Figure (cartoon, rainbow, N blue to C red):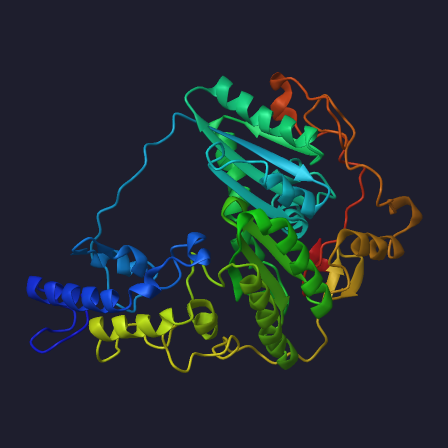
Length: 448
């Protein structure tokens, strides 16, 4: 239903007369503000932030449906929709690529074209370690010490061709100096679904962790130009180090969509303030990169305060459109169109006040303060200091060296036969010491 008017009850399906009235008013408004309809660069990254005004006018026609994309329920309520669907591919192939550095994984994405890859998700080492620790099926798949993983999918008409294309991608990375230290490839549907669950369950898995430190979703929908993803992630690392905050990072890398979940304690007043400072620093960096502070999740409440900086003069145009559809302001009020949007830490869930300093645990062995080990080098240094000599490891030692099981030595040009692909990343892992992952547990026993 659209916004109410005289003789039109809330909840009713709008009449043809009302739809015509909306179309005429919106069309006239957009014609009067044609200079604002030029698509801004960041809009190419996402269609989910703000009203899609640049696609509403089509000659002398007004397509009101396109306004609903990114409207966040501020213009109407969708009660029925007709969807266009894609044909199900005959064969879907998937490869997991493991890297010794996050930056290398991000740079590897630049080697893939959108026309040859249908999906490419990036997970950082913390997410990988959490998956290893919480789901035994992934312990034998994810090599210990992996700093990052790419999940890449391609489609085709028959399995052999799909496998060949995935192997060609792998060989390309090896030749161009983006070495993969381990991989796992499959075209089997059951195995593919199992591997996809590694990425799809990554966020729910975070919320099973115990303790006061929680992964908070307030900078979880950042968009940057995909070609600048490696340098942006490097800047994010520097910002987190400066703020002394631990976070996980996940990305739909082909689209430049980055999900950052800082571990903070909502019962700690200081951490509530850090939410503000961290979001301001990160969002300023996003705008500097020509990105968007919100993509598929739009602005919502946590990003509403950034609508003006993101949208500029378009924001006032959007408010006028809102008044046409919803003159009394009953549809999802207080979001990005609000003249007084909420702060990022203004609508927090009530949490008991923390009485102790937040601590993290290194696999049940050693308590470490949050934020001391963001990168692998610092983490390894702290892990070695807390471990006996027999468990210490050098940062320069390769993660894997086997070359006949789908596990590659760094910079290796030799690739295994396709017959051995499913055995990837299983050799030589049992004796490798673990790199630390910063988690928040209630006590040592709960870490197992």
